[in-house]
Length: 584
Image (cartoon, rainbow, N blue to C red; front, side, top):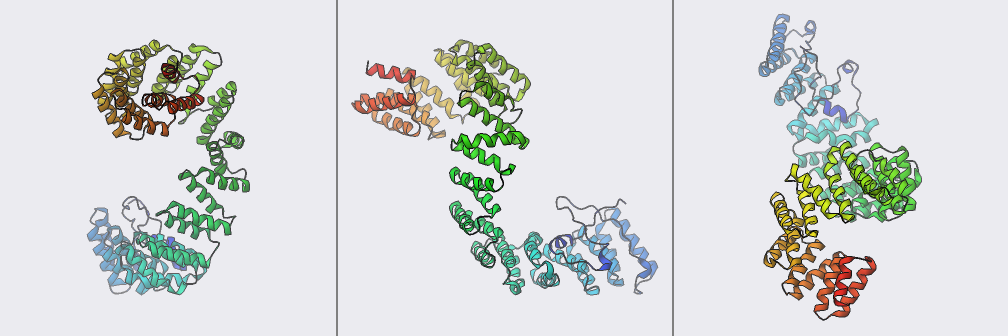
């Protein structure tokens, strides 16, 4: 039989209490049992039969031990448990009782394990292993009344480690089935410790598990009153408050920090929570304070840099990102290099930006970085062929990004007003993968610019078949009809479907306004176009909105709308064409 870990139930309790075992027990402390899989059969530990009391002769004891072990090897756990438990009762030998308890727990005969551990404790009342084993069985069986005095005993026995043991109580009780009963039991057990903050923390935790939020809040506040500078209690109270209101949780943490400004863990938790709520300015303030206290902390440099970027504070972000790039985590280096590339690109330092983008060796930013490199190569005079070559090489180096690189190459051609070549590139790709929605969609947009309505209809209808939840495909087809003044009923239905899928998309709202305009419903068109422009003041939306305002004889408003859009988007072709149509 292979030696294996003990299947000792006492493991759960020994984690919670640090009471030293007696000298005789120091060689038999329970190992931590795995909770993920059933324990293997306990290895044979034959009791020392020469010391067995006289209630059974040695021959009978040997027979029952062999019977139990052979039965266990053959998978007959009931027979093994029966043989050992009978021998334990007859001999009252602690080693036999321990083996019987172990086999009963392995066989999940917790009723027998309870009887055996009771007997063991009766014979060795000072044995911590025996008491811990009984406690563990009682937890599994959910027997709070019998469990209560044993937990009280263990706490009283180890006064030197009382605070730690109180904090571990709920971990020990994690497998107690009735959380309400567990909370009630602890309320009685911990009465003698009402002046200790950790006792109220334990009660708060038990109340939370029992679903009693009011009691949990009351107990954690008692803990804070006893230890006003205890950050763990403040974090717990904030956790309870966050279930109802993140703002209330933030208020609790802010109040604690006012009294305890050096509470690093509380400040860090608050800063992270503020980021989750998109309160970037407030988060940045707390992260900056943390970074000032520990300026070289990798845990802080990265989030402070990202938050600074969120607020367009490049002066703060750039040096921090360089620190991340120099000595940060591997997963953060690529992101830092990408952001540094964007910063350099924004100030027109194209060669520097390309250098940073090339340092993005993997991760989510890899494709975007190489697409930016191709664009910068084109802007820096490398020519379209060099830019396209870089995308093609990148697709070879990184096959998972092949689709994105293909679409980026088509976009380069489109930006160079080589729409026919871009469409040919995508159609060549479709020959090998005819049902790729992204390629079908982009090819349809190119075909629309070229007046190829047959391709537009065929591709977009296929995208709708493949992706019936793709709002943009419905919208693109509907807008193509509306813009040409054809199939206006179908156009309206297509755009209405798109709005069902994405009701606040400004471009789809613009499409609905445009199709209503084409159908002669100017008030309905105005309503949709104003909503769209309010969400996103785009140049083409402004062009449509101004046109409807003009036809409603609100020409001053139309002129203001166009002028405002022209300041934001100077030189926009659609906007300029619309203005010239009405104001030559």
